[in-house]
Image (cartoon, rainbow, N blue to C red; front, side):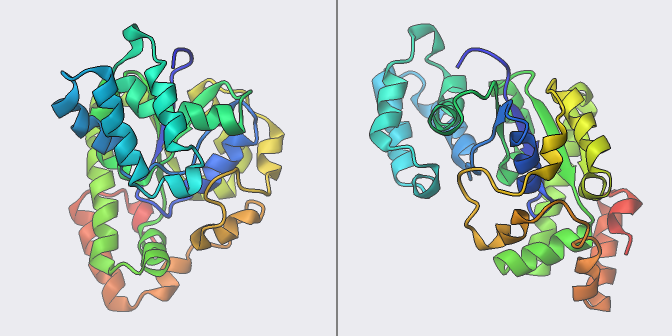
Length: 278
């Protein structure tokens, strides 16, 4: 677990984070496993109550939770392998940092051993940036945002969410990351999905510079999803090359009342106007 500091891609979901994962991994320097759901936040919470126990007991708790989670279905790391890996941890590394990154490190070793940097792109983590910074200090955050109408409409379609519920996820991410950015601006780079697909070369160059990665033109020609969750239905469009076809689709699928309500909510939480233009 020692080496280059990992980074986070955070977003409300349905904002292009899987696309960004695909592009970054095409450069071969980075490994970003599939989404880790609530694994990191729950690991942090669990650690608060188990940290005084032996490392063996702490390991058993973590492995049991992983075994009972959905992650096993697409991370392809066996529970026994995870336990063995954790029990081999040197004493000076038996800490929470190791707990939250060991699974990622194992996935990298299994599927992309030559990568130099680890990343995580789990939308749920966007609501816990202060905790993540405390556990993984100085890790950088790519804060990925998309037009709110497109995001809400996409969450409604992909996950069968109500309009209020989909917007609430957007709001939670915006509030948490905006507060974190005010206090730790040097660790956050805000990126708009629209810039990513309209000006991919310039946007990816900027992201790579921020993360200390080498930009490569082959990032833009990536046409396959990395190992993991590419077979999920809501990722089907990502097998295509970068395109702008999804821009503006959200507003077209929402009725006038929904647009007015979302606009009202957006203004109330202080979203930049460019995020609720239609």
